[in-house]
Length: 391
Ligand code: CMC
Image 1 (spheres, protein in one colour):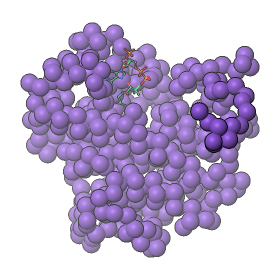
Image 2: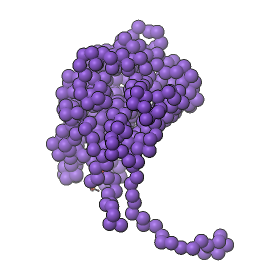
Image 3: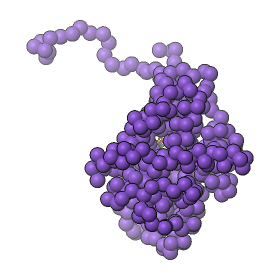
Image 4: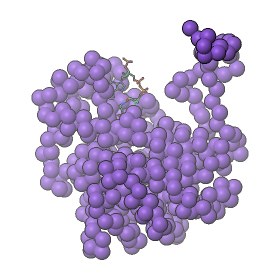
C-alpha cells in the first residue's frame, strides 16, 4: 500500500517526539536533557541522573534531598515477595527471575497502578527505581545460594546495592569506594539511550494504557536478547572462549567468514564510536588497578581484539567499533559479579530511562496506541478444504 512506508527494523522511522536523550551517531555524542554523558559520568551521581531524566532538570539541594528520601522510603520489598523468589530453581538465570519479579510487582503494589492518577504514576516510578536494586540483589543471592541482605537506607544507592550483593546479613561491611564509584558510573552509562528496542517495547506496551510494572517487565524481557542487553554476558564469554591473544586472528577470521559476530561491537546509531564505551574502558582500568588485576589476561585479549578490529578493513568498512558492552563485562567480573548478572545490572540502570520515557509518552497530549502496519506477503484469499481432500 502507498498509505504507509515500509521500514523493517525501524532504521529510518521516528516513533515519537522526546526531550530526554539526544544521540548524534556520527559524532559520538550522547546527551541526557542536554548534558554530555562524559560530564554526568564524571561529576554526577546515578540518583541525580535519575532525577534529571525523570524531571528534566538537575535537582537543587532541597529537591535532591526530597527525591533521595522518596527513593530510600521504597527500597524494601513486601515480606511475601521473598517466597516468590523461592519458587524459582536455584539455577534459574537471574534475568528470568528479574522478569518474573518485576512483572509481579503489580500484585504487591496495586495501589500505584492507576495510570490516570499523576500521583500514582510518580509513586510507581519511585518504587521501580528504589526496588530494582533490591530485586537484582535478591536474584543474585538466590542464584548463589546465599541469604538475602536487606537494604540500608543510610548508604548511597550504589553502596547499598553492592552491600546487598556482597555482604552477609547484619555484617558491618562497606564496599570499596573505588568500586562503589565504578558501580555508580556504570549505572549512569546505562541509564537511558533513547528509542532502542527495549525502550520502544516499554513505550508500545504503555501506549495501550498498561501499568508501568507490566511495561518495565516487557522492557526487561526485550533487553535480555543477545543483540541488545544480553551482549554484555556474551562479550565476556567470547573473551573467555578466545582464551589467549594468540587465538585472536583465527577468531577474527571466523567473524569475517560470518560464523559468528564479534560481541560488544557495532551499533545501529553510533557509526564512529560509542561515547559510553570510552568512559567504560577508563572505568575498567580504574577497577582492575584498584583490585590489583591490572594484568587480567581477558583485558589483554580485549585490547588486542579492539586493536586488530579497528585496523582491519572488514570492521572499518562496516563502521564497527566497541560498544558499551565490550568493556563492561571485564569490569563487572573484576568486581565479583558472574556473567549471568551483567544484563540484570543493565536492566537495573535502564529502569529509570524506561520509566522516564513511559512517563513522557503517557503525558504526551498526542498519545495514541502504538499500532504499526505491515506489508502482507501471504496467500491471497482461498477456499477452505476439508482434511480428507488436502493433497
Ligand atoms: N560483528 C561482526 N559483524 C557485524 C557486527 C558484529 N558485532 N555487527 C554488525 N556486523 C556486520 C553485519 O554482518 C553487516 O555486514 P554486511 O553489511 O556485510 O551484511 C554490517 O555489519 C551491518 O550490520 P547490521 O546487522 O545491519 O547492523 P544493525 O544496526 O542492524 O545491528 C547490532 C546493530 C548492535 C545489533 C549489531 O552490530 C550486533 O549484533 N552487534 C553485536 C551485539 C552487541 O554488541 N550488541 C550491543 C549493542 S550496544 C548496547 C546494547 O543494546 O546492549
